[in-house]
Amino acid sequence: MRITQANFVTSSSHHNQCPEDKRPEFAFIGRSNVGKSSLINMLTNHKKLAKVSGKPGKTQLINHFLINDNWFLVDLPGYGWAKVAKTEKEKWGTMIHDYLTLRENLLCTFILIDSRLAPQPIDVEFINWLGQQALPFALIFTKVDKQSKNKTQSSIAKYKKHLLNYWAELPPVLVTSSQSGEGKEDVLHFIDETIAQ
Ligand code: GTP
Ligand code: MG
Image 1 (cartoon, helix red, strand yellow):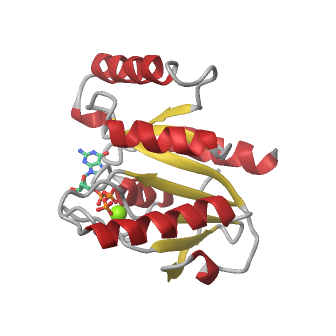
Image 2: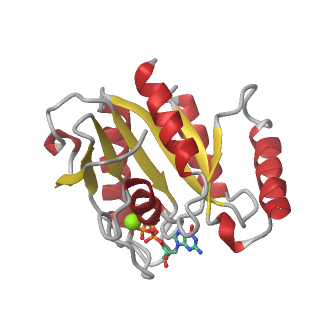
Protein backbone atom coordinates (compact mmCIF):
# COMPACT_ATOMS: atom_id res chain seq x y z
CA MET A 1 0.00 0.00 0.00
CA ARG A 2 1.05 3.55 -0.65
CA ILE A 3 -0.49 6.25 1.48
CA THR A 4 -1.56 9.09 -0.78
CA GLN A 5 -4.05 10.74 1.53
CA ALA A 6 -3.88 11.23 5.28
CA ASN A 7 -6.27 13.62 6.97
CA PHE A 8 -6.81 14.43 10.60
CA VAL A 9 -10.43 13.72 11.49
CA THR A 10 -10.96 14.30 15.20
CA SER A 11 -9.58 14.05 18.73
CA SER A 12 -11.76 12.29 21.30
CA SER A 13 -11.57 12.03 25.05
CA HIS A 14 -14.18 9.26 25.14
CA HIS A 15 -14.80 6.30 22.85
CA ASN A 16 -18.36 7.59 22.27
CA GLN A 17 -16.94 10.65 20.54
CA CYS A 18 -14.96 8.59 18.01
CA PRO A 19 -16.18 8.73 14.38
CA GLU A 20 -19.38 6.75 13.82
CA ASP A 21 -17.94 5.60 10.53
CA LYS A 22 -17.09 1.90 10.69
CA ARG A 23 -14.16 1.72 8.28
CA PRO A 24 -11.32 -0.58 9.39
CA GLU A 25 -9.20 0.93 12.12
CA PHE A 26 -5.63 0.44 13.38
CA ALA A 27 -4.38 1.95 16.63
CA PHE A 28 -0.86 2.75 17.80
CA ILE A 29 -0.03 2.62 21.49
CA GLY A 30 3.01 2.27 23.71
CA ARG A 31 4.99 3.97 26.42
CA SER A 32 5.25 7.70 26.28
CA ASN A 33 8.16 8.74 24.04
CA VAL A 34 8.46 5.35 22.32
CA GLY A 35 7.88 7.04 18.96
CA LYS A 36 4.19 6.56 18.14
CA SER A 37 3.60 9.96 16.59
CA SER A 38 6.92 9.83 14.69
CA LEU A 39 6.01 6.43 13.26
CA ILE A 40 2.61 7.69 12.14
CA ASN A 41 4.27 10.59 10.34
CA MET A 42 6.77 8.24 8.72
CA LEU A 43 4.05 5.84 7.54
CA THR A 44 1.91 8.63 6.11
CA ASN A 45 4.79 10.63 4.55
CA HIS A 46 3.86 13.67 6.62
CA LYS A 47 6.26 15.68 8.71
CA LYS A 48 3.65 17.02 11.05
CA LEU A 49 0.48 14.94 10.88
CA ALA A 50 0.87 13.69 14.46
CA LYS A 51 2.55 15.93 16.99
CA VAL A 52 6.03 14.83 17.99
CA SER A 53 7.71 16.14 21.07
CA GLY A 54 10.72 15.65 23.27
CA LYS A 55 8.37 16.07 26.17
CA PRO A 56 6.63 12.82 27.16
CA GLY A 57 2.85 12.90 27.28
CA LYS A 58 2.32 15.07 24.22
CA THR A 59 -0.53 12.97 22.89
CA GLN A 60 -3.41 12.91 25.38
CA LEU A 61 -6.48 12.16 23.32
CA ILE A 62 -7.65 9.48 20.89
CA ASN A 63 -6.63 10.96 17.52
CA HIS A 64 -8.28 9.67 14.34
CA PHE A 65 -6.72 10.09 10.91
CA LEU A 66 -8.44 8.92 7.73
CA ILE A 67 -6.03 7.19 5.35
CA ASN A 68 -6.63 6.92 1.57
CA ASP A 69 -10.31 7.49 2.33
CA ASN A 70 -10.31 3.83 3.28
CA TRP A 71 -9.20 3.16 6.87
CA PHE A 72 -8.56 4.94 10.15
CA LEU A 73 -5.22 5.27 11.80
CA VAL A 74 -5.41 6.12 15.50
CA ASP A 75 -2.72 7.76 17.60
CA LEU A 76 -3.28 6.95 21.28
CA PRO A 77 -1.72 8.63 24.29
CA GLY A 78 1.29 6.87 25.74
CA TYR A 79 1.27 5.05 29.04
CA GLY A 80 3.87 5.15 31.76
CA TRP A 81 4.72 8.79 32.28
CA ALA A 82 6.29 9.24 35.69
CA LYS A 83 5.05 12.72 36.54
CA VAL A 84 1.34 12.31 36.16
CA ALA A 85 -1.21 12.39 38.96
CA LYS A 86 -3.09 9.22 39.83
CA THR A 87 -6.42 10.73 38.77
CA GLU A 88 -4.95 11.46 35.31
CA LYS A 89 -3.67 7.89 35.07
CA GLU A 90 -7.10 6.56 35.98
CA LYS A 91 -8.74 8.79 33.38
CA TRP A 92 -6.27 7.49 30.79
CA GLY A 93 -6.93 3.91 31.86
CA THR A 94 -10.70 4.23 31.47
CA MET A 95 -10.48 6.05 28.14
CA ILE A 96 -8.07 3.53 26.62
CA HIS A 97 -9.76 0.51 28.15
CA ASP A 98 -13.17 1.57 26.80
CA TYR A 99 -11.79 2.44 23.39
CA LEU A 100 -9.86 -0.83 22.98
CA THR A 101 -12.61 -3.09 24.24
CA LEU A 102 -15.64 -1.33 22.70
CA ARG A 103 -14.43 -0.06 19.33
CA GLU A 104 -15.92 -2.61 16.97
CA ASN A 105 -14.03 -1.64 13.81
CA LEU A 106 -10.62 -1.77 15.51
CA LEU A 107 -8.87 -4.54 13.56
CA CYS A 108 -5.47 -4.42 15.22
CA THR A 109 -3.56 -2.49 17.86
CA PHE A 110 0.14 -1.98 17.33
CA ILE A 111 2.04 -1.95 20.60
CA LEU A 112 5.26 -0.01 20.15
CA ILE A 113 8.31 -1.09 22.08
CA ASP A 114 11.67 0.64 22.31
CA SER A 115 14.03 -1.84 20.64
CA ARG A 116 16.89 -0.82 22.92
CA LEU A 117 15.28 -1.93 26.17
CA ALA A 118 14.91 -5.24 27.96
CA PRO A 119 11.26 -6.28 28.50
CA GLN A 120 9.66 -3.59 30.66
CA PRO A 121 7.00 -4.64 33.20
CA ILE A 122 4.56 -1.94 32.04
CA ASP A 123 4.75 -3.15 28.41
CA VAL A 124 4.45 -6.80 29.37
CA GLU A 125 1.46 -5.97 31.58
CA PHE A 126 -0.23 -4.18 28.71
CA ILE A 127 0.52 -6.99 26.24
CA ASN A 128 -0.85 -9.55 28.68
CA TRP A 129 -3.98 -7.49 29.24
CA LEU A 130 -4.69 -7.26 25.49
CA GLY A 131 -4.04 -11.00 25.21
CA GLN A 132 -6.44 -11.76 28.04
CA GLN A 133 -9.12 -9.64 26.35
CA ALA A 134 -8.47 -11.66 23.17
CA LEU A 135 -7.91 -8.40 21.28
CA PRO A 136 -5.73 -8.65 18.15
CA PHE A 137 -2.37 -6.89 18.35
CA ALA A 138 1.13 -6.85 16.88
CA LEU A 139 4.41 -5.62 18.34
CA ILE A 140 6.48 -2.92 16.66
CA PHE A 141 10.06 -2.51 17.82
CA THR A 142 10.96 1.16 17.29
CA LYS A 143 14.05 3.35 16.89
CA VAL A 144 16.18 0.57 15.38
CA ASP A 145 18.44 3.18 13.75
CA LYS A 146 19.85 3.83 17.21
CA GLN A 147 21.65 0.49 17.50
CA SER A 148 23.09 -2.43 15.52
CA LYS A 149 20.89 -5.07 13.88
CA ASN A 150 22.36 -7.66 16.23
CA LYS A 151 21.30 -5.72 19.30
CA THR A 152 17.79 -5.32 17.93
CA GLN A 153 17.55 -9.04 17.16
CA SER A 154 18.77 -9.87 20.63
CA SER A 155 16.16 -7.52 22.20
CA ILE A 156 13.40 -9.16 20.19
CA ALA A 157 14.59 -12.64 21.17
CA LYS A 158 14.55 -11.65 24.85
CA TYR A 159 11.04 -10.31 24.47
CA LYS A 160 9.78 -13.45 22.80
CA LYS A 161 11.35 -15.62 25.45
CA HIS A 162 9.76 -13.52 28.16
CA LEU A 163 6.30 -13.63 26.57
CA LEU A 164 6.52 -17.41 26.22
CA ASN A 165 6.37 -17.50 30.03
CA TYR A 166 2.75 -16.40 29.68
CA TRP A 167 1.59 -17.41 26.20
CA ALA A 168 1.81 -20.43 23.92
CA GLU A 169 1.63 -18.27 20.82
CA LEU A 170 3.57 -15.12 19.97
CA PRO A 171 2.11 -12.02 18.31
CA PRO A 172 3.39 -10.77 14.93
CA VAL A 173 6.57 -8.70 15.27
CA LEU A 174 7.60 -5.72 13.13
CA VAL A 175 10.71 -3.56 13.26
CA THR A 176 10.82 0.15 12.40
CA SER A 177 12.83 3.34 12.33
CA SER A 178 11.02 6.61 11.78
CA GLN A 179 14.34 8.20 10.99
CA SER A 180 15.47 5.85 8.20
CA GLY A 181 12.03 4.66 7.08
CA GLU A 182 12.94 1.04 7.80
CA GLY A 183 9.91 -1.19 8.26
CA LYS A 184 7.47 1.14 6.51
CA GLU A 185 6.59 -1.37 3.77
CA ASP A 186 6.24 -4.16 6.32
CA VAL A 187 3.77 -2.24 8.50
CA LEU A 188 1.72 -1.07 5.50
CA HIS A 189 1.72 -4.57 4.05
CA PHE A 190 0.55 -5.97 7.40
CA ILE A 191 -2.32 -3.45 7.43
CA ASP A 192 -3.26 -4.31 3.83
CA GLU A 193 -3.35 -8.01 4.61
CA THR A 194 -5.40 -7.49 7.76
CA ILE A 195 -7.97 -5.39 5.90
CA ALA A 196 -8.17 -8.03 3.15
CA GLN A 197 -8.83 -10.89 5.59
P1 GTP B 1 3.93 10.64 23.43
O1 GTP B 1 2.97 11.26 22.47
O2 GTP B 1 4.49 11.60 24.40
O3 GTP B 1 3.38 9.42 24.07
O4 GTP B 1 5.26 10.18 22.59
P2 GTP B 1 5.34 9.36 21.23
O5 GTP B 1 5.35 7.90 21.52
O6 GTP B 1 4.33 9.84 20.25
O7 GTP B 1 6.82 9.71 20.73
P3 GTP B 1 7.28 10.77 19.63
O8 GTP B 1 6.95 10.28 18.26
O9 GTP B 1 6.79 12.11 20.03
O10 GTP B 1 8.88 10.65 19.75
C1 GTP B 1 9.57 10.86 20.97
C2 GTP B 1 11.03 11.21 20.67
O11 GTP B 1 11.73 10.11 20.06
C3 GTP B 1 11.20 12.39 19.69
O12 GTP B 1 12.29 13.14 20.11
C4 GTP B 1 11.47 11.69 18.35
O13 GTP B 1 12.22 12.49 17.47
C5 GTP B 1 12.28 10.46 18.79
N1 GTP B 1 12.10 9.32 17.84
C6 GTP B 1 10.92 8.74 17.53
N2 GTP B 1 11.09 7.72 16.66
C7 GTP B 1 12.42 7.66 16.40
C8 GTP B 1 13.23 6.80 15.55
O14 GTP B 1 12.77 5.89 14.86
N3 GTP B 1 14.57 7.04 15.56
C9 GTP B 1 15.14 8.02 16.31
N4 GTP B 1 16.47 8.15 16.25
N5 GTP B 1 14.41 8.84 17.11
C10 GTP B 1 13.07 8.67 17.16
MG1 MG C 1 2.62 11.04 20.52
